[in-house]
Length: 330
Ligand code: SAM
Ligand code: DTB
Ligand code: SF4
Figure 1 (cartoon, helix red, strand yellow):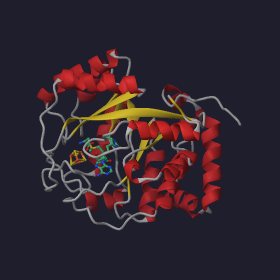
Figure 2: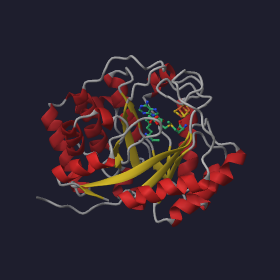
Figure 3: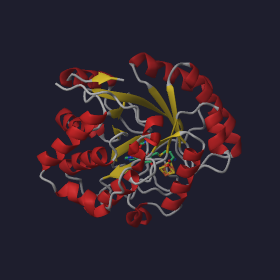
Figure 4: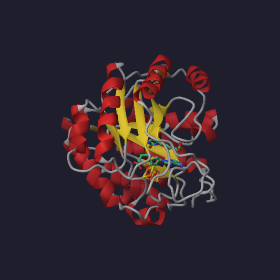
């Protein structure tokens, strides 16, 4: 078995020749999707092994620090105030409650703690309590990540000063499909926030959702857009839509699971040094499907029984899966 050197996907990715890598056209990514399934997986596994230890998977734990009542109309989201999803709104959690969750995540073996808020973006008054959470979670020895929506000038710098390691902000889908899912902001708004995060020196966590009724071309477009960011995001969450009753995307056609795996493989091939996270939707996947996702180059998961508002596999189930596959967590 080849065990290759792990390439940290942070600072080196920016300075290495990787940063000057080729641009991917949508047609080229489509070409990857068109490969025979096993040729695609073999290529992805080769790229994976050249850049990472193929038996190591990073684990992040999520916590919703402010739930529901969001002004935006993202068609997949349980937390939009526009849809009746039965979700109860909650205020920003107190610091101590957040720290209890963070300590538990660390004790379970998570290396990163991601705090999510159902905001279009943080108001000025929201910043200090969130900055305090970042500082205190970091003191526990965990990497920190927040996802707070769109940032105004200066807010990314405040987060950087607090020691934030990652900011999650997804572009979600290809530009031509974006307006069919979300109308209250544009994809360009999201790209502007990503620029602010990058300029402040914070690692970028940016990915999207598969299974919203997008065409395969749009799926290729999403991957090409992520891969062509200079530099590519350090962390790339690929979410399988969790269909939420009450949202516009509650009853769409189900995605072929093999097409989800193809998308993971394309992300791995086009973003060799990035962590590709098998994100939302694992609760609905068999162990065998997840194994194929890891084989296709996924090397990060959300760990812990809850995502933001929906269920994720119990950590015991993941521990058994890791043991069955001989995977180590990092
Ligand atoms: N409000 C912030 C924002 O929009 O960036 C942070 C929270 S938002 C819930 C974070 C991401 O979770 C979304 O961009 C989307 O990619 C993902 N997400 C939300 N609901 C989902 C669902 N039902 N299925 C899959 N992914 C979902
Ligand atoms: C990401 O890409 N996926 C996470 C995280 N970033 C914030 C969120 C998934 C949410 C799934 C639906 C829910 O639990 O509400
Ligand atoms: Fe609000 Fe984020 Fe959900 Fe969109 S994805 S409705 S911005 S919480």
